[in-house]
Length: 546
Image: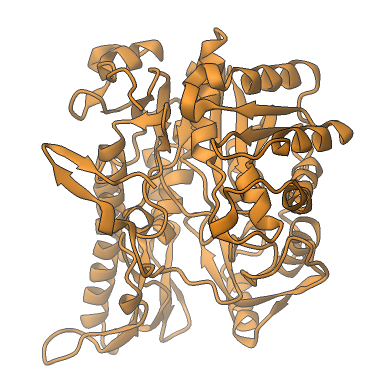
């Protein structure tokens, strides 16, 4: 499936109002952009794309996001996509690339999926530099008041490597202090969240300074600002803070910046990139990771709260394959027609739609069309949506680009003009106790009964309250494959208790992370990773797409 060659990046930046002298090109098709004014007026309409619960069948959320931005431009509107940067972990692991597919891709696909502009490497280096500086401080503080009793941070690496989850450092003579520690994946780094939520360089440095690294022997919380390293870490991230500009297969601007996972972090692209798009375009289409119970919830309760954003419409992406999987069909049989399974899988669609409506959102259902969809499956979903007054549109962007998303774009514009979303109705007030915030998420978003804190989480909570984190949003890290903490739970599970194993204060990012169930912050590789299919042949990277 071929598409026109990408345009020079200067042409794409001109469409956003930037001159050639204002951008910093990375080759012919990628550029860094200036930071937008933090208090500049927002002229654009913000559209969020989220999805039903993920499964192996896939929904194609990035393809729909890219398609919709192109579809709006196809209708004559001025639109841009705002996406996250892919991580090398899933790219070489289970998922493969994360730049869309077919005629609805973000280009250059191979560069974006591999090293791009080095933002992920900058975050990895800055995070591990901070740990090296912390260990060096500890080495020279023996017997002093700022000597550490324990650290709260692991190191990070943007590779799925289960062997690094628990390690011992400092072994051998003269190699530092012996310590049990571990590695998280780079998208889980607090610095990733800090970068994605900072408004400018001054805010970035202030947030870095607030990061809590550990506890001293005197019981004091040790922050980066206490050690005097805020400036150095800001310097390492100074270029990474600038948003990246690329383009879709049809030359639609795409702001690809930041990449926190939604199951272990807040799951949205950078506040800076979204703000820039809203200052320069009439429409900005962004996505949040996984389903509405993870990425969308954090987008509303964390990112929109901080940035002052008000989405005009939320698009709920789904597909026949995915609904059949939710209806109990095995992966090997998903290509077979099965309207009964689609109907059964609509339970999952219903719960996500209701979630979004609780936030005050006007919901448009986007049905991602696949070539093996069975006769009547699309119409079944369309009828179901009509019976609930949910706008519905098929999306064939994969095969037809912006033209294939024109119907979806029309539904989004119609909803924005005639029935826009209400002002955001957050799940909880920031002044509520942490336990009440967690209970509100469990009851209103996941459909459970309450959150149950482990003894360690209760100890964590006392320290968080002492450290001033009681009025921060909460960011739940849990499985994306179910509303509960159990990946195998069906869409109908309700009334469960959500076990919280740990509570972590991310004071720099400005939220409390709650680790639910057996969630891990360093994924492993599957039995047959995507790396088996990636190669470099005749000057081109192949096999990178999922």
